[in-house]
Each structure stands twice: as structure tokens, then as C-alpha cells.
Length: 615
Ligand SMILES: Cc1ncc(C[n+]2csc(CCOP(=O)(O)OP(=O)(O)O)c2C)c(N)n1
Ligand SMILES: [Mg+2]
Image (cartoon, rainbow, N blue to C red; front, side):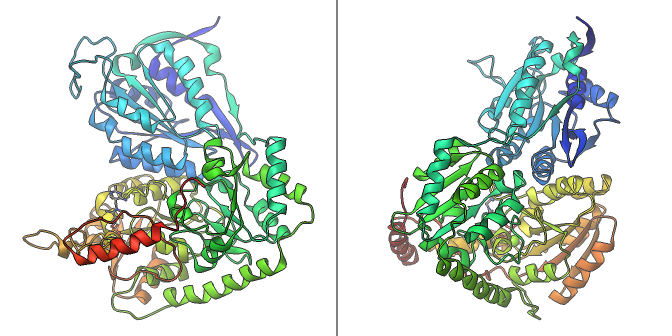
């Protein structure tokens, strides 16, 4: 057997370069690159190995491990999970800084390869710098915290162990139902240890995205359920986009007269002007989508995890004896809330359902109601986003201004704060993939790093990051990375001087304004944070605007820049779009000395009566 003598780290990166996939008819590497922050736990082993392959597997140096893993996650999401990136860190803090980002990828079902360093397998220098000592368990290291946030976890304590471990890693990373983060914790000494690897380990392998076909009985049951429906609604999630099924979905909705509501991950699948596109559904949904959802007798859930924002904490679907058909690659999702499972790829599933339904159409009155509801909602929404000379504009007005300065090919990126609700309801994506919202973990700090990953994936599209002051302050250092990488972003910072959405939530649950807006915090002095000076110090173009008209102009100027731009605008922390939307279960205290809390609790108890448990 032919062998090649390499260190474990050299073999690992060589294996990564040999993994290929086909995108738009072209064979390309599965791994577009590696984000790396070195320390003693990886600089000698992984660092030297990455240097050797820097022309085929580029290494990007980031500024924060969590952020670089967000960027890698955003890259894979923007690539519809066809291509991905890896992240390598030192041991200890470098490694555990990745954990939150691993959770983001896990919740959102996005492939991400994490390669944190780990302690010496030979244990000779114990305790090595940054080693956590467990008095009762010699096998535990901080990297064990990756177990619950990884779809596959392994600790590499022998060089030959990567042969089966990487095979298993690739199987997970490329599986539409199973994919998520894979963590291979690389013991520092083992990274540098040589082994005679079989040459076959490095042979090129081409991976393709599996399009699973459904079970015949499940398909027949789903067709029968749809045929019996009088008021069907489709809820489309991220799975539709990952399956590249947006055209199939549009054809399905049109042929069978079924209106469609989009989740946060699913938004942009349907063209904004599709007459059956009801827009956002759920807690942050449009009036049009939520009215239909409340009345629906059948919900065809396509590629969605049915998280609480989508189901209005399971109080949204109020139709008597409504049924859910769960079309999903993952059986866990397909059978939620006693759904009739239809386990398969979204595109294949919709095609087969359509063939089985033949010329069947939803009752015309139902389809017509949807079309009219959509028209009414668009008029309502325009009231919130129209141009205005408001001194302190609302987030919705900012969304409108950014949209007016936009082009159909733009991609808007966001994750946390009040903006996800406003964007979900009001943003009008021009093309599939034009709406990139991380709302599975809704992780503050994802926005700018995520924008970087999206731009690396889609260099020809304008990437507009919309971010609150809170999220900006939590993680912004990848502005500098975006400049280093030539990955130009337009970042719009909405400065409402605090955690506006949580303050509003606090008030809605009877709480006093406390510890959210800066003015309501314990302080000696209120900071007057100069976001433009901050962004400029990281190398970005930066400008503060005083009106929505100036904002539109500044975003237009930013489009023309080749380097990342930050545009800052002060906004009103108290305003949000009250039209549309649905109830969200946020537990209100049962007893309190404050009458406002007691009143909120009484409303809460009433609202909970509409919530279903398990069906
Ligand atoms: C890492 C993280 N910590 C805490 C939260 C809870 N949280 C959600 S939104 C938010 C405030 C966000 O503030 P900002 O970015 O200024 O947006 P705004 O609410 O003002 O629109 C907080 C604290 C979170 N989602 N992520
Ligand atoms: Mg804020």
C-alpha cells in the first residue's frame, strides 16, 4: 500500500483540499477556506500545515473566534450548504470562544467544521498553559462543551484516528438532514506527530447534496390530507432554500392556489410580487399571513423547524382540527406536533405532491381571500416604511430608506434586536437568498461577522448589514477583517442607545424600564458612543446621518465604495411596527408587588388558553 508520511495536521488539511463538490456545473472545493487564530495549541501543528496549502486552501486571520465561526456559518448558509469553511483555534479560551458560534450553526442546521486545539495527548507537560484540570476525570477538557453543540464530536489523540473521524465528519457535514457543526478537537502534540497515511486517503472525492425521495405511504397520506383541505396554507422555511426549491414552490403555490407564509430562514424563497406570497408568518408575521394561518385547516410545513416565532408559540393555528403535513429531510422536524410526516427533500417532495394532486386546487374563495389580504397588508406596511422627515425615525422607516437605496440583487444580513421583526415583516427581498437572517439562535454579534461570510460567498452581490447599537458593540472587530479580505460591506447602525426590543418586551410583560436602554441603567455618566469614530478606527468609511433622506443618500454612496462603509443613524427606541404579528409566549411573573405585572399576568393567562400542547 502506497503511503505518505505527514503530520496529522498536514494530513488533515491535505484531506480537506481533496474534498470537492459541484456548484452550477463546476467542480469546486467543499472547503472554501479556513478561519484561523493561532496560539500555542495550533500554531506549530495546524499553522505550519495551513501555510503549506495556502494557495489551495486559503487561511483568513480573524479577530475573534466566535465571530470567525459566525462568518464561516454565514458563508455556508449563503452557499445553501453546498460549500463551507473550517475554523481552527488554540486551546482553552480560543477554543471555548467558538462554543456560542457552534450553537448558532447547530440551531440553524448549518455545516461548520471546528478544529480547536486540545491538551497534550501524552499528558507529559500537564497542566499545559490554559489546561483546565478536572480532579476526578482525566479525559475531560473544556472542549467537551462542544458535545451538545456538535452533530459529530471527536477528540484526536492518535494521528491515524483522523482517517475514520474525517470520513464521519464529511458524512455529517454534507447530509441535508444531519448537517451542523462538526468538532474535531486536535491534541496539540498529535497535530505535530507523523504517520504513514495511505495515499488513498487523499484521493479527490466529489460530494453531492442528497435529494431524498419520500416513502410512498407518507406521500399518499400527505396527498390525501391536502385534497381534503378547504383552507390550506404553506409555511416555507430554510429547507426550501437549501433544496433550491424556490421555483418549484412558486409553481406549486400557483398551480394549487395555496398561499405561502415565510419563516425567518425561509424568507426570499418567493418573489416579493408573487400574488400568493403572504410574506412573513408568525410572531413577526404580516397581517395577511397570520389571518390565514389562524383560519387554516391544513398547514403544509416545508423545510421548517416550526420554532415558536413561526407557530406563535403554538397559538397561531387556531383552525378546528387543523392538520400539519411536515415535509422535511429530518424526521425529527417532520413529525412535530403530530404532523403527518413527509420525510424527503423539499423540491422532490413538492414535485411529487403536485403530481399526486393533479388538477386539484384549493377552493377559489380561499385563494382569493389570500390575494386580497396580501394587497391590504402591502398598503398597511407602506405606512410604516414610507419616506418621512421624522427627527428620530423608527426602525421601520430606516428599513424603508435602505430598501429604497437598494437593488434587487442585494443581500440584507441581520440577527438580533428589534430589526429582525421589522425586516421579517417589511423587507422586500429582490431575489432568493437576498434575506439572510440568523434567527434560530438570534445571536447578537452575528451581524457584521455574518456579513463577512455572506460577502465571501457572494462577492458580486451588495451585502447590507443592518445592526443595532447593542449588537454592534457586542462584536464589531470583523469590520477590520472585512477590509483585510477585500470583502466590502455596507453596515447600517441603528443607534437607539440601548437594547430597545428587550425594553419594549419588558414593558409589555409589566416590567419597569430597567437595565436595557442606557438611560435606564445604573450609571455615573451616560456614554455618548461615537460609532463613526469607532468604525473609522477599524479602517471603514464612516458617516453619521441626521435624516432618512441623508440615510438613503449615504447608502447609495456606500454602494460605490470598494471598502466597508458604516452609516450610523439615531433611531427611536420606543417605536415598532404594531400591525401584523402574533402572540409570543414570554412567561410573566405569577405574583408581584407591581400592579402592572399582575395585569400583564392576567393577559398572559388568557393568551395561554389558545396555546396547544403537542397537537
Ligand atoms: C448574545 C446575545 N445576548 C443577549 C441576547 C438577548 N437580546 C436580544 S435582542 C437584545 C438587544 C439588542 O440590542 P440592539 O442591537 O441595540 O437592538 P435593539 O433591540 O435596540 O433594536 C438582547 C440583549 C441575544 N439575543 N444575544
Ligand atoms: Mg439598540
